[in-house]
Amino acid sequence: MATFFYNQIIQSEEQPVEGMKVLYADKAEPGNIRYVHDVVYAERSGMPLHLQMLYPDIPAKLFQFQMQEEMKRNPELAERFRKMQAARPAPPPSGAKGAPGEARFTGSNPYQPGLRMPCVVFIQGSGWGKQNCYSTLPMLIDIARLGFVVAAVEYRPVDVAPFPGFVSDVKAAIRYLKANSEAFGIDPTRIAVWGDSSGGHTSMMVGTTGWTTEFDDGENLDVSSDVCACVAYYGVSDFRPFLADGKYPRPFLFDRILGPEGVKRPDGCAWMSPITYVSKEHPYPPFLLMHGDVDATVPFEQSVFLYNKLRECGKRVDFYEVRGANHGQFFWTPEVLRITGEFLRAYV
Image 1 (spheres, rainbow, N blue to C red):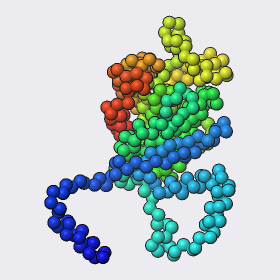
Image 2 (cartoon, rainbow, N blue to C red):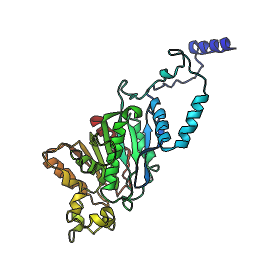
Image 3 (cartoon, helix red, strand yellow):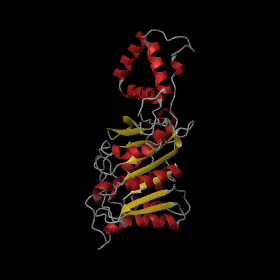
Image 4 (tube, rainbow, N blue to C red):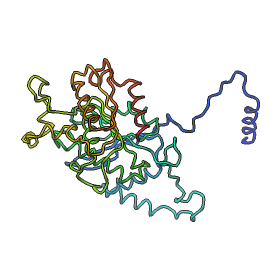
């Protein structure tokens, strides 16, 4: 039967079916996106904080790493796994087919064989409150298809940890990914940050403070939290105009963002404004800023402020007005994502 089936295949190749059309495979598998969910990168204020990760190609080693991390947190699982391993038959001799040491580590970029994959840490807008990182994953798939690992990061809401808690959390996630880059199959020197709205503000904060450790705390402090590129959609770059008479209304979230101690600081607005940390003497990654011109929540000029400051300091920055777009509404167009992807491919 097998010989007959094989012969039928050969015959079909030599004598194609009349009228048959041919499609061509793509060995890069650009549409074969895989999802690694609920990776715990830290526990802070009693909250486990997660990464939701989209992969164009999952490293086989990652599954072993995830199991080891879960067993550290769950002694009962570790004991069950130990008993299961003890009950298994002895492995075949080294070098034999199927030996454990022959598991293939596929943590390489399918578009650039031999290189680990670049990574984009995405920060979802949530008014600095509790996030639903699952909801934005479909919008991030197009970037994963370009060969990037996309890691949507969860941070503590400001009612749990006010500023700079959310900035410190994202920096902790970046350090975690760098420290465990082999397991995640990513290149620790090629990590970018990208966010929208409050996530855009956080992305700006990460991008403008890579030269300082002021907002670094927790684990992996021997690893830098700097990034090689920063993308920010309609984020706040300077909170000071919100307090100026006749300029902007005082946002109702302002006191919540800073918290009861932060609002006592006379420099509170400047402290949480990304523009404060831009100067000629410090290094910064390339920035991509995008903002709708009819944004009714975060004024368009907030991106203009940071754009002008970066240019004045001789830093690399690109800025796009999305005409007719409101705050996240009518904004996520194929053209916006295309430009974002081109920027990331150029600098990450």
